[in-house]
Length: 452
Picture 1 (cartoon, rainbow, N blue to C red):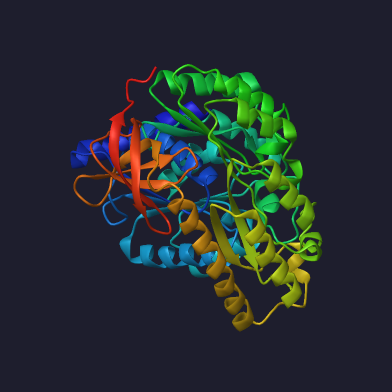
Picture 2 (cartoon, rainbow, N blue to C red; picture 1 turned 30 degrees about the vertical axis):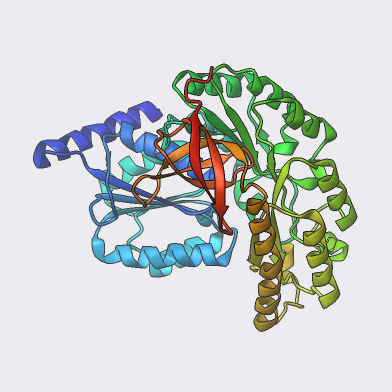
């Protein structure tokens, strides 16, 4: 049925081409995580199949699609701000992703954003051609929000456009079973659904045959992949043509020694892991329903010695005391993170934490947030400084904003700006000559692009 809907929209696009001498334009803006980026590639693929061509901006496009995130209130506010701007542009406006799965969002869209034409959620991207056809045929707002999480696995089969020639995300699972007390994700993404190993391997082998050098295995919690994540890593490591394997996100309570061993023994697996700590206070971690203590988390970081660790930290969870916050600062110092994404607590309606009455004053949360940055930023700078004078292998990403300067990533995901010449996917040896807090600076020593 999806093929029939694609063909019918394609016919409408052909009529547009006959009248205007060009294909109708599309513009996709992605908010949120790598999972959303991957799903935007699938939506781009569907629109391409339906006769749309990419536009450079909202102003130039006939159709504007926002693939949204609702993890934090600030992300939702950015979406609403952009939607308000679109009203005067008279475009076909599509809103999808996590935000529409929240009933409050649908109420708000109906109240103040009636110019949004098509709305769907996280479980029915494969219905997009049907929904677009319905709007193009009848011209009335179309809303389809599914609560049946079993539909999510059908999205794995959607044809895809790749935004990057040298790297690709590969979704291995949808959903989350953890229900952290502050987190909206299980409520908008549903429970965990894992893809079969043969299906994943077929996709990765096809990507490698098409020139992809790096894959990122994606899931809300890859460590709980149903068919054994460490075993999957070992299988992917054998795929010819791949240079690097990354993955995210990992939940500390599910990080097994088997996975750590696989990371150490598989030469293509990058020696870097994103391991959200969220708090260094065992009392707050229990209130967050994280399933581990401060001591257990720090024991994991000890077992990961030699593997670069980045993390997420929430400041100002309801009831967080000064002692709790000092525990977080202590844990950050002991863990020695190579990078940290720090956030102020964002209340999400529908989560258990939203019912807590002991929220902290905003001024106090801001003060603690700044104190945390006084530790995390110097740590990241020190991590980058440790590379000065060393030669590291970089996978080129492309040219930077400065002529003659390119960007790439080291194995540990450190961003490097370097002098030289490179194409996306090239492997280079780069000598690190300097650094800033969020990137290193280097010079190309040797090209490894012909590396077998």
